[in-house]
Image (tube, rainbow, N blue to C red; front, side, top):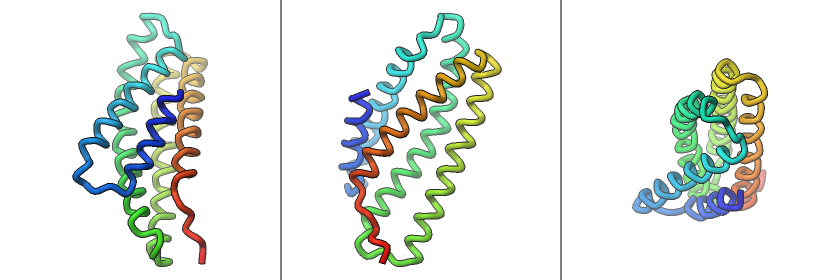
Length: 153
């Protein structure tokens, strides 16, 4: 869990970096996915038979979610570059992006919750969803804590 929070603390530091450091971001993202998977594996404690059903579904989930994470990271970089001179119109774009990202994330989770429930039952599906919610909340708190407020003026 600490590695996950550490990763996002490091990720936040990268929000204002140039595209030349994209390889470092990709490395950190890869490490985060690996750590998240290890945490999830330890949390769910699936039998071999259940794991054989779960991990392919989770792999598809991560691939879909990764695209959303990339879009969010780009949005954060854009915000970091503009927040001190943000216009009302630019702020509105960031607000709309936030709602689109939230809706997309919810849609992805709902889709994979249904798949996991169908293959493994409601308990495992809910355990997975709770894990995702917990990790996401911890991650979001660290990110939000590091991102400056707009100011609202």
